Image 1 (cartoon, one colour):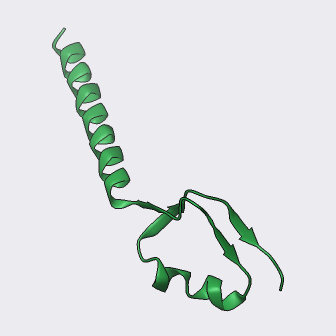
Image 2 (cartoon, rainbow, N blue to C red):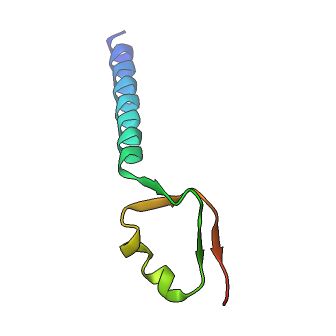
Image 3 (cartoon, rainbow, N blue to C red):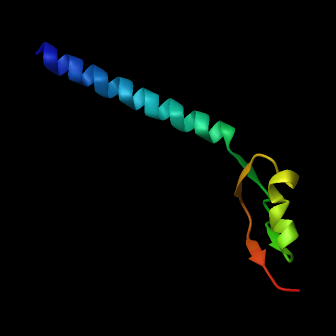
Length: 67
């Protein structure tokens, strides 16, 4: 019976850790560009991390088009 309680305690602790990890990950990641972005040049893609630091998820559409 003690083994079962210990096992349930470990499961609860694991769920708590996974939940907290998920919440922390969501608070660190940053959604950006709700209207999307259009890239027309390689330089725009190259400079994206500089212009949008911390942006990990673009909410809008991503369009890559040739000029």
